Amino acid sequence: MIEEFFEHPYTLRYMRGGVTGPHIDAFAAALTPQGFKHGCAQNLLRGVAHLGHWLERRALALVELDEEILKDFRKHLSRCRCVRPNKGQLAYCRSGSRRFL
Image (cartoon, rainbow, N blue to C red):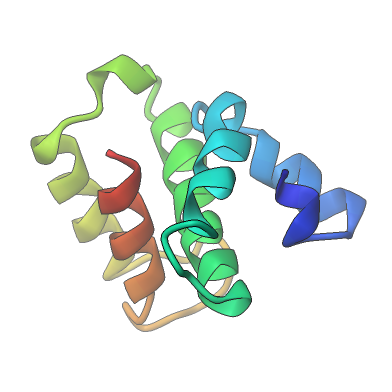
């Protein structure tokens, strides 16, 4: 399903990695019927993948994801250098992770 949003093999591997990876296709499938445009859905998916890799680096299982862990993830975003310097401007990560929860 995420192939409708991304083509590059590296991106697809990244999206399917991390602890959210096994669920990313189902999340993607839910976005289109909810009326999300292609670009917005891509950003939400990037946010969920980022969350999944962040959880994995902290040795946290997906079943542990709750509001408190999302709060820690949001703190991480303000200083995140995982993908590229972003000066805390990763609103799609906050939004995608919240929707995913």
